[in-house]
Amino acid sequence: MEIICIDKKTFDEFRTRFCELEGRMARLCHSQEDTDLKNWMDNQDVCDVLHISKKTLQVYRDKGLLPFTRIKHKMFYKPEDVQNLLESSYHPIKRKP
Figure 1 (cartoon, rainbow, N blue to C red):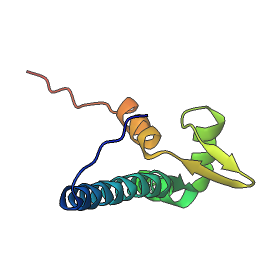
Figure 2: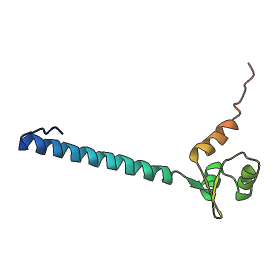
Figure 3: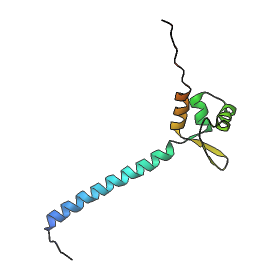
Figure 4: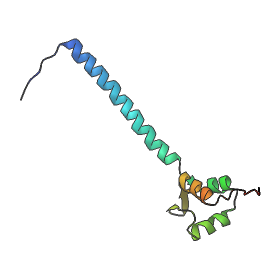
C-alpha cells in the first residue's frame, strides 16, 4: 500500500469540493426520480388533454391505441404515449392550388 501525504489546506479544499460535488449529484438524482413519477397521467388528465370522455379513453385502451399501466384499478399513461397518439392521428389540411 502506498501512502501519500498532503498538507491540511489542500486536504480541506479537496474535501469541500468533494462534498459540493456529492451534494450536486444527490440533487440531480433526486430531481430526476421525482420528475419521472410526476409525469405519469391518470384517466382524468388524459381525458382533459384530449377532450374526450372516459368511455372513449376506454375504447382507445381496448383497441390498443394508447398504452397504459394498471395498478390495482387505476390506470396511468405516459405523456409521450398521449403525444404519439395525437401525432399519429394528425391530418393536415391539403389546399388545392
